[in-house]
Image 1 (cartoon, rainbow, N blue to C red):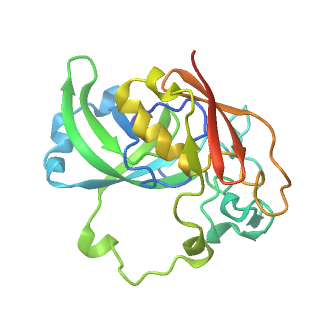
Image 2 (cartoon, helix red, strand yellow):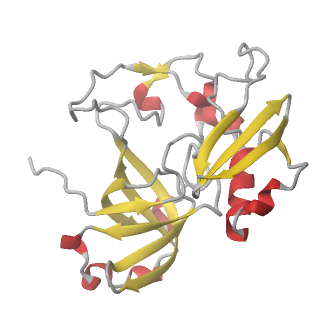
Length: 236
């Protein structure tokens, strides 16, 4: 069997998974860059890609492996975050990172193909759900005639779409961020970036302050009922 090669890495504003959207495309304004490994910085390999609006990225989870890079034992059932971490589903009925093989699949919008003097061709993409440095194993064009299924059914996930929280910024902390980073962060916060067992039915009252790194800043917030209030934005 031929082993997989890392062909590229995704550069994003999220060094950790806390705060990341749980699926690609949920926050369309979140952007990233696909930087190819040196052996794959070949412009001809991207010939024609500009004609596609979206791409499939096949990538690797960091979860599911130990510090020695050895696979952890897999479980046939997992607790999907979208169900509050309380209900078990079959691993193949979820998109949990805890899988027999730690492989992720995301569809992203292709914004542009740029030529970097040092890095060669790079892809600017939007709708990311990956941490900074995520390895990419393959890239394929999204084909609307084959990949879009209008009458598809999303199972238990269909009832969990949409924003969950109202975001309040009483001290105008968002103004501390570069302007292009404000709208994507607000969309992330509306989706409720907390661990799913917090503030859900059975999770009790949530009184703690949360924080996560984003675009070189530490984002601090609290949630009361259906309202998320920004408490601080600090340069890291």
